[in-house]
Length: 341
Ligand code: F6P
Image (tube, rainbow, N blue to C red; front, top):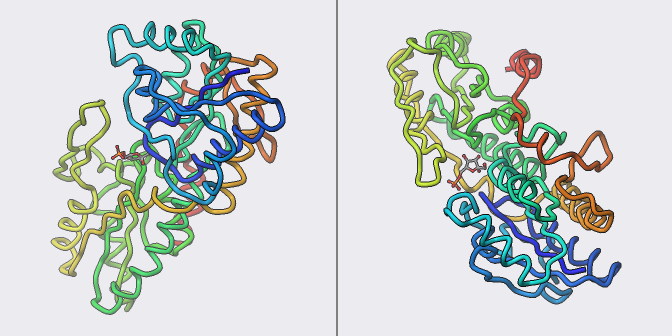
């Protein structure tokens, strides 16, 4: 068989582990040929690819990013995108395509699959918000980076008796905020799923100082918003691909909290450091398993599906289901965290 692989959307620790695993399983165990498209769907649309053999994937398991490069370009962005991609698949004699990506990529994968292409998806995102899989690789690494940063920030916050508002990634969901906040013992967590009341938040942080504590750490998911009408808030806008370009929850919250509490407050934006660098062991293992199962699905002809983790098993789920809804933080999970804040 001839299989094409691509990585699309925001990069994520573990992408190289999937690519490596696909190549090992396909080339060594099945005698397939694998090619990798450069920079996501863009590579397929422009027929820009490289051969992936064992040499090409040697030494990449622990490397962050993606050796193939990524972009946010999708076939539907071009008028003739889907047709052009189909033409290239035919020209290259591909029997299957394995796109590795998040919500946007999986939507594109579904579109390509509906148009008749043999597609098997692999989900990835540090946000952990893809509904049909218990976990996505990249999340564990991001939570680890954020937790370490929060631990470090506590000592400087305490030295200066400050409130630090730490912004972590999470456009639509607060999984990174919830887990890193719990793991580091933050004092308040705000997530997109639960619009916050600035007065309540200020009261919670204020009570901490009244109780004699010298600092407070507030973790805010970048997509968190106040309850309508409770505070003036700049939501930001959209970038050229229609993705949120946030105006900065940490900056706005720190100004509000400083004014209300009369305590120095500073915003800290962790940003892309959460996505860079080497994946944790957990993410490497999950990514490797996804790659293996994607190749098996290709050989079974199980197209229009993607790999997913359910409990400890890897299963295949229809792409149509995968992109229906996002996995948001349930109220009970938030309550569990709130209890120990
Ligand atoms: O979806 C993954 C993610 O890292 C989000 O958490 C974040 O909002 C977004 O990507 C950032 O995207 P970009 O790299 O395009 O700024």
